[in-house]
Image: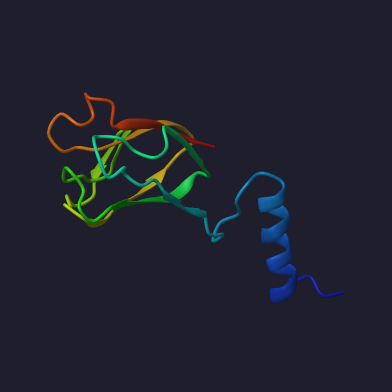
Length: 124
């Protein structure tokens, strides 16, 4: 009887552990990319809420050419506070490793967040 698991058996064990709700050592965590764009006029995102799996979360924001204001994307909450670059047009991107919980995505430029350019990100 062979008591040493083969590579195939080890992979099956990791898949079974992930399917069962726990992640075995060495298994990759989830990665999520969300697209939350800005509107051409004003200080608004196209979404006010989003969901993602726990793990590496990236939010990509496209600021349209001819936008009235520069914008960026940022995430804060649960000890996280990260910001993407400010752009007049083009893409701002931010990434963070997030645990389950509630976060805020927002525009960190001027008083955009205070004027409503923010949303809720729920991570499970």
